Length: 110
Image 1 (cartoon, rainbow, N blue to C red):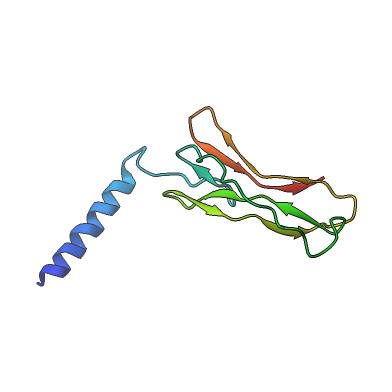
Image 2: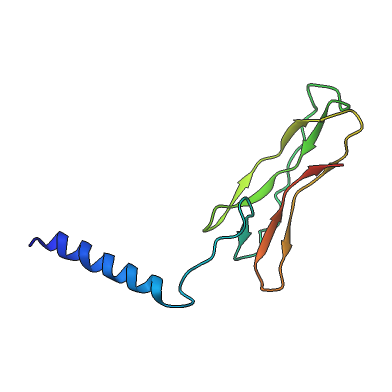
């Protein structure tokens, strides 16, 4: 029996045993929900360029911090097209939960 086979077998047994212990299974958040274990850094200051299209057609979506499961990564702001002329953009934001984690509330239109 090779050493790599013995390690693989031991790892499989360990993983199977861990799954049977109550409280060791981490539950995933609901599909699409982003939960962070640390507060986001302060937003970066961005220079908003003049839009190429009229402001009635586009709106600036500000930059934001994205949680990738380990750390935050900055996503730069950019212009997005309005779904209709009277649509009002509501920016996404991070909300602190009572358990100390942070939930991303996605942007939307009103």
